[in-house]
Length: 337
Image (cartoon, rainbow, N blue to C red):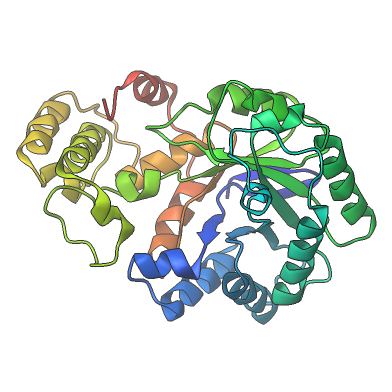
Protein backbone atom coordinates (compact mmCIF):
# COMPACT_ATOMS: atom_id res chain seq x y z
CA UNK A 1 0.00 0.00 0.00
CA UNK A 2 1.25 3.49 -0.78
CA UNK A 3 2.44 5.46 2.21
CA UNK A 4 3.33 9.05 3.04
CA UNK A 5 5.13 10.90 5.82
CA UNK A 6 3.28 12.74 8.56
CA UNK A 7 6.01 14.29 10.63
CA UNK A 8 8.11 11.41 11.92
CA UNK A 9 5.31 8.90 11.23
CA UNK A 10 4.65 6.88 8.09
CA UNK A 11 0.95 6.55 7.27
CA UNK A 12 -1.15 5.14 4.46
CA UNK A 13 -1.44 7.63 1.60
CA UNK A 14 -5.24 7.43 1.78
CA UNK A 15 -7.16 8.15 4.96
CA UNK A 16 -10.80 8.47 5.90
CA UNK A 17 -11.86 12.09 5.50
CA UNK A 18 -14.40 14.17 7.39
CA UNK A 19 -16.05 11.58 9.62
CA UNK A 20 -19.17 13.56 10.46
CA UNK A 21 -22.45 12.05 11.55
CA UNK A 22 -24.28 15.28 10.74
CA UNK A 23 -22.96 15.54 7.17
CA UNK A 24 -23.43 11.81 6.59
CA UNK A 25 -27.08 12.18 7.61
CA UNK A 26 -27.46 14.80 4.86
CA UNK A 27 -26.41 12.10 2.39
CA UNK A 28 -28.96 9.70 3.92
CA UNK A 29 -26.24 7.62 5.62
CA UNK A 30 -27.10 6.40 9.11
CA UNK A 31 -24.93 5.78 12.16
CA UNK A 32 -24.67 2.04 11.53
CA UNK A 33 -23.32 2.50 8.00
CA UNK A 34 -20.80 5.14 9.09
CA UNK A 35 -19.64 2.79 11.86
CA UNK A 36 -19.23 -0.11 9.41
CA UNK A 37 -17.27 2.12 7.05
CA UNK A 38 -15.03 3.34 9.87
CA UNK A 39 -14.33 -0.21 11.05
CA UNK A 40 -13.81 -1.30 7.44
CA UNK A 41 -11.25 1.43 6.76
CA UNK A 42 -9.32 0.81 9.96
CA UNK A 43 -9.52 -2.94 9.47
CA UNK A 44 -8.21 -2.59 5.92
CA UNK A 45 -5.12 -0.86 7.26
CA UNK A 46 -5.85 2.84 6.74
CA UNK A 47 -4.04 4.85 9.41
CA UNK A 48 -5.37 8.41 9.21
CA UNK A 49 -8.93 9.26 10.29
CA UNK A 50 -10.07 12.88 9.94
CA UNK A 51 -13.01 13.65 12.23
CA UNK A 52 -15.34 16.64 12.35
CA UNK A 53 -15.29 18.89 15.41
CA UNK A 54 -18.42 17.60 17.15
CA UNK A 55 -18.51 15.31 20.16
CA UNK A 56 -20.72 12.59 18.66
CA UNK A 57 -18.34 12.07 15.73
CA UNK A 58 -15.28 12.26 18.00
CA UNK A 59 -16.80 9.72 20.36
CA UNK A 60 -17.60 7.36 17.46
CA UNK A 61 -14.00 7.44 16.18
CA UNK A 62 -12.51 7.02 19.65
CA UNK A 63 -14.73 3.99 20.30
CA UNK A 64 -13.77 2.41 16.94
CA UNK A 65 -10.03 2.86 17.59
CA UNK A 66 -10.34 1.16 20.96
CA UNK A 67 -12.65 -1.61 19.73
CA UNK A 68 -10.24 -2.56 16.95
CA UNK A 69 -7.17 -2.11 19.19
CA UNK A 70 -5.37 0.11 16.68
CA UNK A 71 -4.44 2.91 19.07
CA UNK A 72 -0.76 2.25 18.39
CA UNK A 73 -1.04 3.05 14.68
CA UNK A 74 -4.20 5.10 14.14
CA UNK A 75 -3.65 8.84 13.65
CA UNK A 76 -6.92 10.58 14.47
CA UNK A 77 -6.99 14.13 13.12
CA UNK A 78 -9.39 16.23 15.18
CA UNK A 79 -10.50 19.81 14.55
CA UNK A 80 -10.73 22.94 16.66
CA UNK A 81 -13.76 24.74 15.16
CA UNK A 82 -12.91 28.06 13.55
CA UNK A 83 -11.76 30.76 15.93
CA UNK A 84 -13.49 33.43 13.86
CA UNK A 85 -16.86 32.06 14.91
CA UNK A 86 -15.85 32.61 18.52
CA UNK A 87 -14.11 35.94 17.99
CA UNK A 88 -16.86 37.38 15.82
CA UNK A 89 -14.73 38.96 13.10
CA UNK A 90 -15.01 38.57 9.32
CA UNK A 91 -12.98 35.58 8.13
CA UNK A 92 -10.72 37.70 5.94
CA UNK A 93 -9.67 40.00 8.77
CA UNK A 94 -6.56 39.53 10.87
CA UNK A 95 -6.99 38.10 14.32
CA UNK A 96 -7.74 40.63 17.06
CA UNK A 97 -4.88 41.43 19.41
CA UNK A 98 -6.67 39.74 22.33
CA UNK A 99 -7.52 36.15 21.44
CA UNK A 100 -9.81 33.95 23.54
CA UNK A 101 -7.10 31.30 23.84
CA UNK A 102 -9.14 29.65 26.56
CA UNK A 103 -11.52 28.59 23.79
CA UNK A 104 -8.78 26.53 22.11
CA UNK A 105 -7.86 24.92 25.43
CA UNK A 106 -11.52 24.21 26.15
CA UNK A 107 -12.02 22.55 22.75
CA UNK A 108 -8.93 20.37 23.16
CA UNK A 109 -10.07 19.24 26.61
CA UNK A 110 -13.55 18.51 25.24
CA UNK A 111 -12.13 16.39 22.43
CA UNK A 112 -9.91 14.48 24.86
CA UNK A 113 -13.00 13.62 26.90
CA UNK A 114 -15.05 12.61 23.84
CA UNK A 115 -12.37 10.39 22.30
CA UNK A 116 -11.04 9.20 25.69
CA UNK A 117 -7.50 9.57 24.34
CA UNK A 118 -4.60 10.46 26.63
CA UNK A 119 -3.31 12.80 23.89
CA UNK A 120 -4.68 13.93 20.54
CA UNK A 121 -2.54 12.53 17.67
CA UNK A 122 -3.18 15.52 15.38
CA UNK A 123 -5.16 18.66 16.26
CA UNK A 124 -6.04 20.95 13.36
CA UNK A 125 -6.73 24.68 13.41
CA UNK A 126 -8.80 26.31 10.63
CA UNK A 127 -6.84 29.47 9.71
CA UNK A 128 -6.52 32.26 7.13
CA UNK A 129 -3.27 33.52 5.64
CA UNK A 130 -4.00 37.08 6.78
CA UNK A 131 -3.91 35.96 10.40
CA UNK A 132 -0.11 35.91 10.32
CA UNK A 133 -0.24 39.71 10.29
CA UNK A 134 -1.80 39.80 13.74
CA UNK A 135 0.21 40.25 16.92
CA UNK A 136 -1.90 37.39 18.30
CA UNK A 137 -0.45 34.84 15.85
CA UNK A 138 2.73 34.15 17.90
CA UNK A 139 0.52 33.85 20.98
CA UNK A 140 -1.56 31.18 19.24
CA UNK A 141 1.60 29.36 18.16
CA UNK A 142 2.87 29.52 21.74
CA UNK A 143 -0.34 27.93 23.03
CA UNK A 144 0.01 25.09 20.51
CA UNK A 145 3.62 24.48 21.59
CA UNK A 146 2.63 24.49 25.27
CA UNK A 147 -0.06 21.85 24.69
CA UNK A 148 2.53 19.64 23.00
CA UNK A 149 4.86 20.03 25.99
CA UNK A 150 1.98 19.17 28.33
CA UNK A 151 1.30 15.99 26.35
CA UNK A 152 -2.27 16.91 25.40
CA UNK A 153 -1.52 17.20 21.67
CA UNK A 154 1.17 15.26 19.82
CA UNK A 155 1.08 17.29 16.58
CA UNK A 156 -0.61 20.40 15.22
CA UNK A 157 -1.86 20.95 11.69
CA UNK A 158 -3.54 23.82 9.85
CA UNK A 159 -6.77 23.67 7.86
CA UNK A 160 -7.15 26.07 4.93
CA UNK A 161 -10.63 26.63 3.52
CA UNK A 162 -9.73 28.98 0.68
CA UNK A 163 -6.51 29.58 -1.24
CA UNK A 164 -5.65 33.30 -1.15
CA UNK A 165 -2.61 35.38 -2.05
CA UNK A 166 -1.25 35.21 1.51
CA UNK A 167 -2.04 31.53 2.14
CA UNK A 168 1.46 30.44 1.21
CA UNK A 169 2.78 32.42 4.20
CA UNK A 170 1.24 29.80 6.48
CA UNK A 171 3.78 27.24 5.27
CA UNK A 172 6.22 27.48 8.16
CA UNK A 173 7.99 25.35 10.69
CA UNK A 174 6.13 24.22 13.78
CA UNK A 175 3.15 22.62 12.08
CA UNK A 176 3.10 19.00 10.94
CA UNK A 177 0.44 19.25 8.25
CA UNK A 178 -1.72 21.45 6.06
CA UNK A 179 -5.22 20.32 5.09
CA UNK A 180 -6.71 21.90 1.98
CA UNK A 181 -8.91 21.16 -1.03
CA UNK A 182 -7.17 19.53 -3.98
CA UNK A 183 -8.54 17.35 -6.76
CA UNK A 184 -8.60 16.90 -10.53
CA UNK A 185 -10.95 19.84 -11.04
CA UNK A 186 -9.65 22.17 -8.31
CA UNK A 187 -5.87 22.64 -8.44
CA UNK A 188 -5.62 26.12 -6.95
CA UNK A 189 -3.58 24.74 -4.04
CA UNK A 190 -0.66 23.54 -6.18
CA UNK A 191 1.76 26.40 -5.19
CA UNK A 192 0.95 25.88 -1.50
CA UNK A 193 1.48 22.12 -1.85
CA UNK A 194 4.88 22.66 -3.49
CA UNK A 195 5.97 25.07 -0.74
CA UNK A 196 4.85 22.69 2.00
CA UNK A 197 6.64 19.72 0.47
CA UNK A 198 9.90 21.70 0.32
CA UNK A 199 9.64 22.13 4.09
CA UNK A 200 8.60 18.49 4.64
CA UNK A 201 5.14 19.49 5.85
CA UNK A 202 2.53 16.86 5.06
CA UNK A 203 -0.38 17.92 2.85
CA UNK A 204 -3.81 16.40 3.48
CA UNK A 205 -6.12 16.71 0.47
CA UNK A 206 -9.78 16.89 1.38
CA UNK A 207 -12.51 16.51 -1.26
CA UNK A 208 -10.30 14.46 -3.61
CA UNK A 209 -13.54 13.35 -5.30
CA UNK A 210 -14.85 16.95 -5.47
CA UNK A 211 -17.76 16.34 -3.14
CA UNK A 212 -18.82 13.25 -5.07
CA UNK A 213 -18.66 14.85 -8.51
CA UNK A 214 -15.66 12.68 -9.43
CA UNK A 215 -17.46 9.54 -8.28
CA UNK A 216 -19.56 9.82 -11.43
CA UNK A 217 -22.90 9.54 -9.64
CA UNK A 218 -24.14 13.15 -9.82
CA UNK A 219 -25.86 14.49 -12.91
CA UNK A 220 -29.15 16.00 -14.17
CA UNK A 221 -32.13 13.88 -13.17
CA UNK A 222 -30.09 11.47 -11.03
CA UNK A 223 -31.80 10.58 -7.77
CA UNK A 224 -30.52 12.09 -4.54
CA UNK A 225 -31.94 11.77 -1.04
CA UNK A 226 -34.49 14.43 -0.16
CA UNK A 227 -32.16 15.96 2.45
CA UNK A 228 -28.96 15.60 0.38
CA UNK A 229 -27.10 18.93 0.40
CA UNK A 230 -26.20 18.45 -3.28
CA UNK A 231 -29.85 18.95 -4.26
CA UNK A 232 -29.01 22.66 -4.17
CA UNK A 233 -27.02 22.25 -7.41
CA UNK A 234 -28.94 23.68 -10.35
CA UNK A 235 -29.28 22.03 -13.76
CA UNK A 236 -26.43 24.07 -15.22
CA UNK A 237 -24.05 22.92 -12.49
CA UNK A 238 -25.20 19.30 -12.77
CA UNK A 239 -24.74 19.35 -16.55
CA UNK A 240 -21.22 20.75 -16.13
CA UNK A 241 -20.40 17.88 -13.76
CA UNK A 242 -21.84 15.33 -16.18
CA UNK A 243 -19.78 16.70 -19.07
CA UNK A 244 -16.64 16.69 -16.92
CA UNK A 245 -16.90 13.04 -15.92
CA UNK A 246 -17.82 12.16 -19.51
CA UNK A 247 -14.47 13.58 -20.62
CA UNK A 248 -12.71 11.47 -17.99
CA UNK A 249 -14.52 8.35 -19.18
CA UNK A 250 -11.93 8.09 -21.96
CA UNK A 251 -9.37 7.02 -19.36
CA UNK A 252 -11.35 4.41 -17.39
CA UNK A 253 -12.94 1.03 -17.99
CA UNK A 254 -16.36 1.76 -16.51
CA UNK A 255 -18.33 4.66 -17.95
CA UNK A 256 -19.77 6.72 -15.05
CA UNK A 257 -23.56 6.93 -14.89
CA UNK A 258 -23.48 10.73 -14.83
CA UNK A 259 -21.91 10.81 -18.31
CA UNK A 260 -25.21 9.60 -19.79
CA UNK A 261 -27.49 11.69 -17.58
CA UNK A 262 -27.98 14.50 -20.11
CA UNK A 263 -27.55 15.18 -23.82
CA UNK A 264 -24.45 17.34 -23.33
CA UNK A 265 -22.85 14.54 -21.31
CA UNK A 266 -23.65 11.97 -23.99
CA UNK A 267 -22.06 14.16 -26.67
CA UNK A 268 -18.94 14.71 -24.54
CA UNK A 269 -18.76 10.96 -23.89
CA UNK A 270 -18.94 10.13 -27.57
CA UNK A 271 -16.10 12.55 -28.32
CA UNK A 272 -14.03 11.27 -25.39
CA UNK A 273 -14.31 7.61 -26.37
CA UNK A 274 -12.99 8.40 -29.85
CA UNK A 275 -9.65 9.44 -28.36
CA UNK A 276 -9.45 6.66 -25.81
CA UNK A 277 -5.87 5.43 -25.20
CA UNK A 278 -5.07 1.78 -25.82
CA UNK A 279 -3.85 1.19 -22.28
CA UNK A 280 -6.58 1.86 -19.71
CA UNK A 281 -5.00 2.20 -16.26
CA UNK A 282 -8.04 2.72 -14.01
CA UNK A 283 -11.35 0.95 -13.52
CA UNK A 284 -13.43 3.97 -12.47
CA UNK A 285 -13.32 7.75 -12.48
CA UNK A 286 -13.11 7.70 -8.66
CA UNK A 287 -10.02 5.48 -8.78
CA UNK A 288 -8.47 7.78 -11.40
CA UNK A 289 -9.18 10.86 -9.27
CA UNK A 290 -7.69 9.32 -6.13
CA UNK A 291 -4.56 8.09 -7.88
CA UNK A 292 -4.07 11.53 -9.46
CA UNK A 293 -4.03 13.10 -5.97
CA UNK A 294 -1.69 10.45 -4.57
CA UNK A 295 0.74 11.01 -7.43
CA UNK A 296 1.20 14.59 -6.20
CA UNK A 297 2.71 13.21 -3.00
CA UNK A 298 -0.19 14.24 -0.77
CA UNK A 299 -2.45 12.23 1.52
CA UNK A 300 -5.96 11.85 0.09
CA UNK A 301 -8.91 12.09 2.47
CA UNK A 302 -12.02 10.90 0.62
CA UNK A 303 -15.25 10.79 2.57
CA UNK A 304 -15.66 7.04 3.05
CA UNK A 305 -18.94 7.19 4.93
CA UNK A 306 -20.26 4.05 3.23
CA UNK A 307 -18.51 0.73 3.67
CA UNK A 308 -18.74 -0.05 -0.05
CA UNK A 309 -16.46 2.93 -0.74
CA UNK A 310 -13.56 1.37 1.17
CA UNK A 311 -12.54 -1.28 -1.45
CA UNK A 312 -12.24 1.35 -4.19
CA UNK A 313 -10.05 3.52 -1.96
CA UNK A 314 -7.98 0.46 -1.12
CA UNK A 315 -7.52 -0.31 -4.83
CA UNK A 316 -6.20 3.22 -5.42
CA UNK A 317 -3.86 2.91 -2.43
CA UNK A 318 -2.46 -0.37 -3.75
CA UNK A 319 -1.99 0.87 -7.33
CA UNK A 320 1.18 2.08 -8.97
CA UNK A 321 1.52 5.75 -10.03
CA UNK A 322 -0.28 6.74 -13.21
CA UNK A 323 1.81 6.78 -16.36
CA UNK A 324 3.59 10.01 -17.25
CA UNK A 325 1.55 10.31 -20.44
CA UNK A 326 -1.77 9.98 -18.61
CA UNK A 327 -0.77 12.49 -15.93
CA UNK A 328 0.26 14.93 -18.65
CA UNK A 329 -3.10 14.55 -20.37
CA UNK A 330 -4.98 15.05 -17.10
CA UNK A 331 -2.93 18.15 -16.27
CA UNK A 332 -3.83 19.76 -19.58
CA UNK A 333 -7.44 18.56 -19.78
CA UNK A 334 -10.07 21.25 -19.18
CA UNK A 335 -12.34 18.90 -17.28
CA UNK A 336 -15.09 21.07 -15.87
CA UNK A 337 -14.64 24.08 -18.17
